Image (cartoon, rainbow, N blue to C red):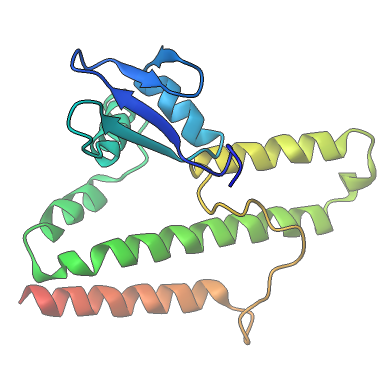
Length: 183
């Protein structure tokens, strides 16, 4: 496994300082967010106990961005997340969120591909560099999630070609199931 594929190990010292084991220097939460935006997986562990603190620090990064007005999560989603911790639906929420983000990444990839096929500017000098910047921006916006990177060819479509309708239907079905479980 190459270094880029292995999670970047960050150690938290008793002083709560975070230490990058690859570069042998201290890092901030913003540095860690930058590594993630670049597509790097991170693992944050407590030096003394060996406890995995990754989830705690990722939540802290999200909370800091939200508190600075960089809101990505609507209040209704945050409220539903809080509710999910007190219902039987808790076991379904991680799978639902993972599937939702996967669908989001797929739709972004298809959008980029469609824009490339439809855009007459694609033949202009320098367009490929601009396209690479756009893809990097979209990847950064999704946290580089997906691992495999951007697909290079057209994506397979739903038999009827209406992926969005299928996703909406699945979402409605999941919401109905969650509502029934809350009763």
